[in-house]
Image 1 (cartoon, one colour):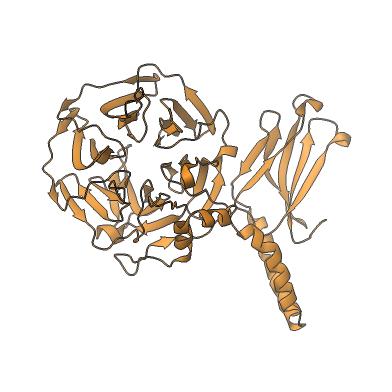
Image 2 (cartoon, rainbow, N blue to C red; image 1 turned 120 degrees about the vertical axis):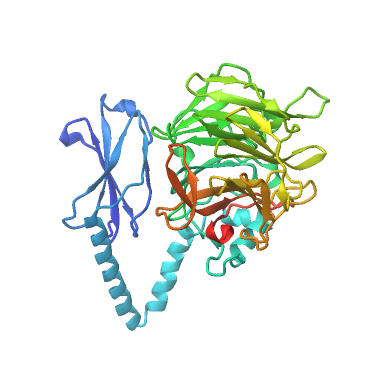
Length: 494
């Protein structure tokens, strides 16, 4: 039961006499894991009050054990995502060298082929993402994306690249929300997939650097929001919170506000004061610690069709209250499935849908005066669309990609400059030729300044944007995506 070349996760129940302590250990194959999930089951009431389980990693030899955390009746699971000690890394290197030498010796004896077949039979399973065969049968687009090579980029030396396979993957979906909580971590919430089925794996955490997904629903405590589509998730970098608002599910409409505290990973359902209607396919952004929500679909009594909104609602987290500001100027037409991007102190609203109309107009709300300022748009205006993806790429420019025009999903990409009111269409599509709608784009910051685009942050400093991350979406023909792709930003802006 014990392999000298395998790690062992050990647990010890503490809180009783040493002679009565319970221990358990489990071998973990190399390489050193990036994440470890440890949980307990059973009745904690059988142990004395204050008992807890100490979890640590051990290896053979004189290497000091590395603590991973503790479990208790109040905290019955833990996720470890730390750094391994130098002793552990050196031990792994020695073991790998021994394994390579042993393999070479055995191959000289003529048994290398047999060992290779045996190794593949045990390793192929974990390398195959759970449910990947099921997804491939459901979505021909997913299958094509995983098999196809890298699409062309506007810069030959900086190709559009897929981040590749991961030990676990979210199900393919559209209508989800995606938010960046630090330069290397993304949270995915909700969405809908094949045959209008709501995702049974609604919350995931993506580590961008090593392209590893972790089901975050098992990490967070508190009441998780019901799975939904057309909601928004907005991250407050100063308060370290995600605000999840609205959405719909099977004819049920939501106006609830859920807050995920990233410091404690605890969900809270806010009993907010004020009035806000149930909304889906709206847009939201954070400005001066308040959540701005615009547009969206809301239900009307049968047999009337659902209506669209052109109202602005603001949620104040400090007082847990909704209110409507006084706004002047020419309001946009009611719409849903539009985009809204904050550039400097301006909200830029583009596109959207109010059946049977699809829009290509652009509106700018000056948050200093709370006034919709008229915009004389220049350049190549994008065709009408909704459910496109958008993101800021500098302090005065935003990008839109894809979407749905009422008949089909789109593939084109455009950039808008709020200072010059000019649209520019990219001649070479950096995101490939596969049509997408209901997907997400995030702008990622690099660790160095370089000559990349700079975007003014909320704290007055500057973060340097270098990469765009694209996830999910659908082709409006039954195909849904769950791939993650990274696009160098300079290939787009230059």
